[in-house]
Image (tube, rainbow, N blue to C red; front, side):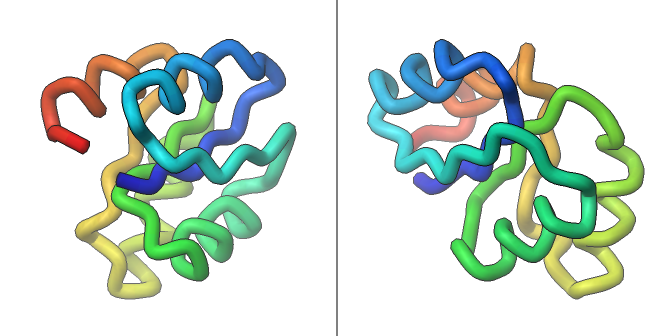
Length: 84
C-alpha cells in the first residue's frame, strides 16, 4: 500500500513504515500539489492535516475517487482497517 503523507511530523511516516506502508512524504504541500503527487504515485490514500474537502474535490475532478482522503491523526487506524 502506498500513502502520500503531508505532515511536518516524521513520526507519522515512521509509524506507517512500521505497518509496512510505502510512504511518499511531503513536508508541506498545497492541495493541488498533493493531488498531483497522489495521482503520479498511484496512492491508495492521502493523509493531510487539513483541507480534506478540497483534496477530495480535486481528486474527484481528476477521476480518482478510489483514493482515500484521511486526516494525519487517523491514517494509521485507516491503514490497519484497510489492509496493507
